[in-house]
View 1: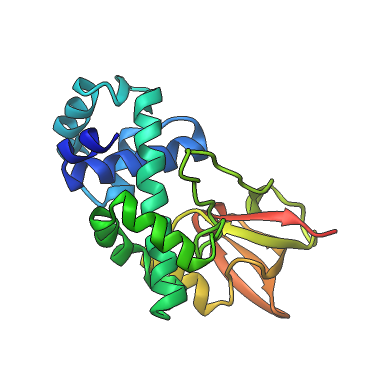
View 2: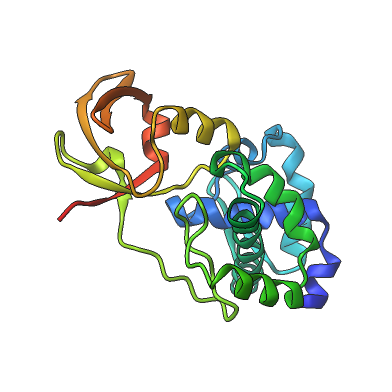
Amino acid sequence: MKALTLELSHEAEEYIEAIYKLQKRSGVARTKELAEELNVVPGSITNTIAHLERHGLVEHTPYRGVRLTAEGERLALNIVRRHRLAERLLTDILEADWSEVHESACRLEHALTEDVLVLLERRLGYPKFCPHGNPIPTESGEVNDVECYPLTSMAINQTCIIAKIVDEKRKVLMALAVKGIKPNVPVHIVKMRQKDIVVCVGGKEQTISHKEAESIWVKPQG
């Protein structure tokens, strides 16, 4: 894996990571969603996808989207592991705010070698989840996630515990953090409206968009 990682640019690694996350959410990474995740225009991703396909890391079906191959997923798990341990380094040791570390971790992850990762993981006490509640793959590529569901699938007034926030972009996390929405906090839906959703967090009602709600994954309480 190390030789292959060195052959790929930082940009290609970001693509692999984004495809992995989208595939975990919906089974496939569609071009429009991938462009949104990477904050690029849809037309600009064609060459990189073709490059990854030539390396045998993805399979691209026109009009259906992109999926990782077995080798692509193996590489993705390594990238995600580096990223989420970098986030824990920033929050646990450098005391950065949990809602602001994703972009910094995107840059830092490329500099973490396997040797440094082993030392970092030991120093952090072998964390199982990133600051946003997403699982950290083990060195062997195992992912031990908790059973959880999108908030939008919960019934009104059903009390849940926030397990993770799957959209880790700073803008999203900061908007949610201001409203007290973060992992391990109880939440329940008060109203489902056409344009937004009213939730109760910390005894206060907060309004969030449907898209924000889809990023919040919860586990039923009790």
